[in-house]
Image (cartoon, rainbow, N blue to C red; front, side):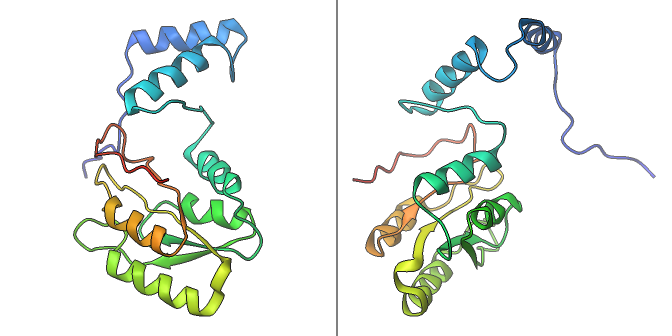
Length: 175
């Protein structure tokens, strides 16, 4: 039987030299390389700022915490995602509420999202805090509709874009 490798990394001598240089610098978590990465990433995605963290899981956790998600809150997440999406919600004492995905895109199903929002509104009212769409495998979610639903129901949005870079779509800015 043939072994087909999954996601082999493409690492050149240039990357290896950069890692060795960083290891020898004594600055493993912060410093000039981290700052340069944050600046380059912010520029690449058209953001004013970027913050480097150790994982997308940590980024989701920080985003949820920044929005005040906590004990007994509800956050809508898609059923088709990496476990970190729901785990970040649980880590803050909140409850992930799973929403089915569109079988074609594997992104959150907009009709099901609206149904869940309405059901949660009836059952939990103010405890519903946010929706966390996941852009899966470079396939961007329908953010215009998600933003519209979220604004209508006073929900915050945290986009899990770990699988999206360098995908581009028009920016949707919330006031």
